[in-house]
Image 1 (spheres, rainbow, N blue to C red):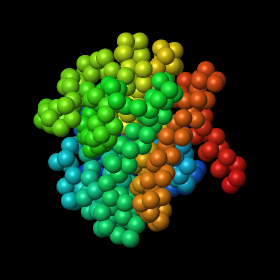
Image 2: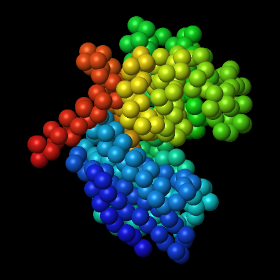
Image 3: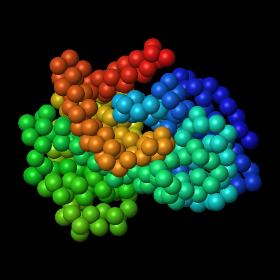
Image 4: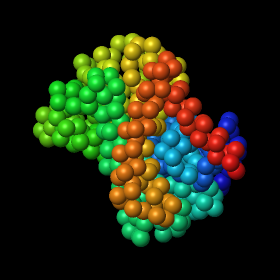
Amino acid sequence: MVEKADIDDHEKVVTISDPDSGLRAAIAIHSTALGPSLGGIRCWTYPDMREATRDAMRLARGMTFKNALAGLPLGGGKSVILGGTEAKTPSALHAFARAIDGLRGQYIGAEDVGTTVADIDFMRDVTPHVAGTSWGAAASGDPSPHTAEGVFVAMQAALDVVHGTDDMHNCRVGILGLGNVGWKLAERLSRAGAALLVADLDPARVAEAEAEFGAQAFAPRALPYAPMDVFAPCALGGALTVDFAKISPARIICGAANNQLADPSVDTALWQAGKLYAPDYLVNAGGVMNVAAEALGEYDAYRVATQVRGIRETARQCFEQAERTDTPTGAVADAIALARIGANSAAA
């Protein structure tokens, strides 16, 4: 059963229920102004379908801005599958792939929290409207190294703006979340000489980071307020609150998590507190750049790497415009993205 409805400013929101496989899922398409919507497939535990759909919508809107800032000819969409990894049965994944296929290319799905390259490969058997696969002429594979690299170069830009140098030796960086992206960011930062503070819900992962990087371990709730130069949220969203803006010692916030602001007012609160927030949908776009190259059928590893490194310059422009106009960085990034969307609409 598929139910469709237009909700808020989204072009389309689809909820899926398949009794045979037990699948319950939602697909949100926020905008196709720049092209087909592209965004990850998240597999997570939600209280109910209403909350799952709301999360898909929030994430889809973020993808619209992320893809626009990345200069991609793609719109924003996102999807969620209710349940933990046990929900990803072969029959459920194929049922979800059929739902994607029914949208006739309006939405292209990719790996996200709770899904893997193998899951995308499996869905590719049913629909061509997925990307981030491990096989095929344009296969892009795991996007997480590219996401981590984009966050790293954006962090360099932020350090340069705040301290006049991007040297990370003696720089204390707190990483909240040691999943695929968080771990790869930790590797990159460790090689650059940063001192790491880490937190994750998995104690084994934290212990591994202590052994591998000499990292200092914290409880997830305590890490945002620990003494550090940079805070890198790399878990789920909502880590940045007004209290964080007032209390945290970190001068820079630059991480891979989506929807880091607990609510829009936090953008202003961070700016007024003298903290440089690197908008998440700007700095974590490396993964979508990688996946987009496959979705557009023209994957070139060198070109993707060049695009990802370009995130540093985009971030620098955002930070400098924020300082020049005394405007919170999130508002500046929004304005840049909306201008690109508007220019495309006008040209069309």
